[in-house]
Amino acid sequence: MILIDTLSYTSRLRQVNPGEKFAFCMLTLIFCVVSRSLAVAGVVLAATGFLTVCRGGIPLSRYLSLLRIPAVFLLLCSAAVMVNLSRTTLNAFALPIGSWYLTGSEEGILAGFRLALTALSAVSCLYFLALSTPPPDLLYLGKKLHVPGLILELMLLIYRYLFLLLFAASAITTAQESRLGNHNLRASLRSFSQMAGTVFLLALRRSNALYDAMESRCYDGEIRVLSLPRRARPGEVALIFCFELILLALTLAARH
Image 1: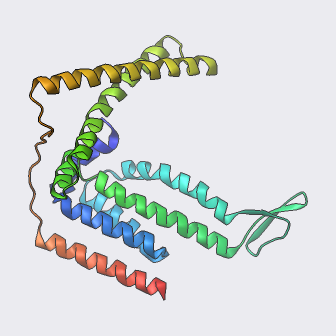
Image 2: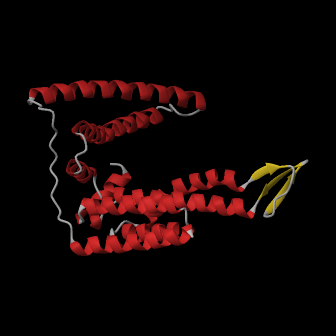
């Protein structure tokens, strides 16, 4: 199984009402993006990390490894805001490159850092939801929110067959490596194209078999998923409300 999917089933926060987690995630994400404040971004990053690791029981090393990929990507993207190639120097730093300067301003560095921290905090909100709420609970929540059934069924089928296709691709890759199918770049490209074609044909065959199986079982347009209802707890709702009030206050303070 995918690491995030495995961790979501083992999280202690799985027993919390999915509606509470979804509301917390969306409201916090909105405040984080709208405020563009370092204080809000720092509070959100710390709060979601605490809930995911300390309350959810997700290992800190796993959580940091998941954050590392978007963090590196965001730092590289924010470098475009921090660094400029110009003939004139700016007030933060300047590295001469011939008649040009690789330079940056204090305002640009601050803007780039704010952009990276805000985006990373937004990613941490989504990680909080993904690492504490398995897909069946999200589908149950979608039904409660009256999401169109077609979208929910597509989500369910994609979730179900993603693992099957990943397992098939992994088995094919292992077989190719055992036959030295990746000993150089040309062989690797040829092996990858063969693997992709095989997985595509396998997906077509499985989709046809799934359609026949559903038709033989009198499919009526609805795929039913077993999900245990979890009632919202007033104490948890109150904590979410207080936390969002704090973010609102920080957002208003940042605006002024």
